[in-house]
Length: 287
Image 1 (cartoon, helix red, strand yellow):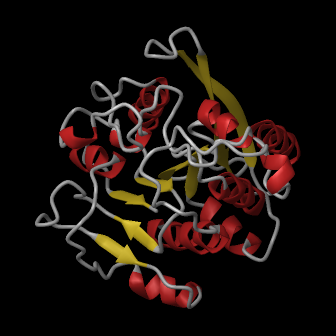
Image 2 (cartoon, one colour; image 1 turned 135 degrees about the horizontal axis):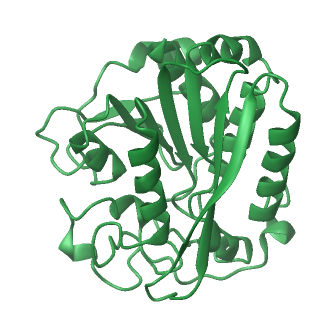
């Protein structure tokens, strides 16, 4: 059943992703017009929160418990409260044996990931063409979903900072999981891959790490945009077992065939998958 859940996640989440330009090396420049003036089809942070809240009280296919995890920033944005929405989703009367955790939007400019999170939750609620498969998965799987893991910086993107990848402290959240395998060349203010002063220095990663510890999921998926791939550990050392898994646009059957066929790529970057691998989680994937 974990494999079925795995395929559902890929079929829905990957099918909705529109890939963004990841070539910009700094994310503190290039301010433009507000999001709603340039790309009004994207929901804002507040709109995503509202729609997910509405779903939590009207979901037909599952039970949703929506809560907020908060932590005060002690870095360069000291004093600012960071609040992450957390959705725990299961079928009524059922506590699935498999636990899956999905995190969306670690990188602020990857706006489409929030849309993917909303669409995935709608599917679990019995909407869309994958509703029947979602109902089957919910017989055995319960989900913990963080639909917007970088809300403060995402609001800066919505105001026109479309190149912003990092959080409010200028830290790449996906490089802030733990103090191992860090890349000193990125310890520069304004570098969009800055891992921060130490592992879990950021309120967002502290919240996410605590969720992993408390939920102890069997499957962890970090959803990004920017490339057709599924990334598996180890990102910090391409010689170790695990590498990128390619995904093309040939449909769900192609996705399923490729999931377990590793494709070695010599250049990759350390991230949450590596920390989770060392935490000995069974399935760890990053998009």
